[in-house]
Image (cartoon, rainbow, N blue to C red; front, side):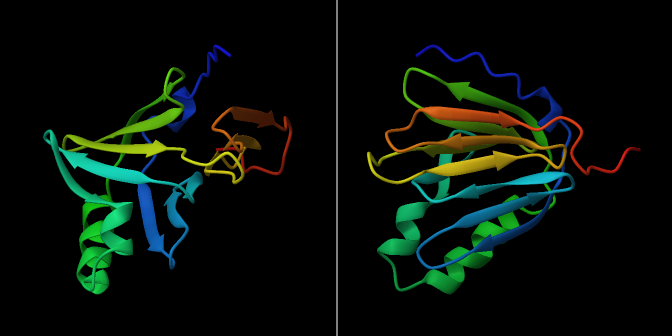
Length: 143
């Protein structure tokens, strides 16, 4: 299914908090919404992988990787978010040449949820197909 998603309202949002549970989820809180990740992900800076989900699964250095993750993501700003339909991957372009790739790898579990305080929710369903939900007129604060 070709999927044309408009994710422009995430542009310019700051990452205000980062938390990582065992083994999932990785949660990014934006100033207005967030992203909950329960599938493979990797953070790339200037073309190099800095850290990825597997680093937490196969290492005895979890505290080190947790600090690296939080320090690498917190206080960054979302420049753009793309949905790559051909490989079911969500890609976040961040300030300071950062890219966060999120790629679904399960036929039975949901992979991630991208949500905004205005009622928007994009969920990666089992198998990777995205499901969009927009609730207009939800209880968001108007600026």
